[in-house]
Length: 212
Ligand code: B16
Ligand code: MG
Image (cartoon, rainbow, N blue to C red):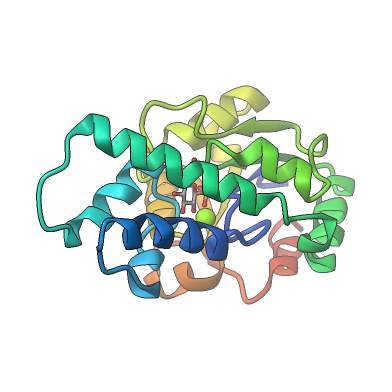
């Protein structure tokens, strides 16, 4: 097998939380009278919480202290976490669940490589709390995607060299992180059109043919 492990991005690959990120950031943007729309929200994919807020603040008429930024980012996270409580096993598609099981049965190690500090909470909500062999997320990194740290940590947790790992991503920042980390990648969703991935997936289950 060319790859011994697959490292999955979480949001936008395993499940979809963008509508909750949107709702929570929108509440903060409204409070600050900042324009916020789907186009800006799309730029936040795979980007850390504070970097996301800095993107939102591009439309802010003024300068905000770091302390205030942290306060608003925390407030956003409180709203977001409340919304995440709506998630359940129903938010894990049959295709993703079955494909993950088949990949494991083929002998692949499976890991998460997510920028989110809420990754474990989300995995618990969708019934995958104990499923993965390793979880590398926003809590164990100092630099966010496009830096490769989150994926390199996942490989380290799995005890595997980078070239044995395949990354699955929906964000361009994540594909760039994989390239920088010398890992092959599979793009899904919006990331496909970037042309930066080793493979483009029409559908999650296409991973099964890559692993053959
Ligand atoms: P949090 P991923 C990313 O997750 C999201 O795509 C991105 O929109 C979010 O800002 C980031 O996590 C940080 O999330 O505020 O929960 O720490 O796509 O890398 O799984
Ligand atoms: Mg993502």
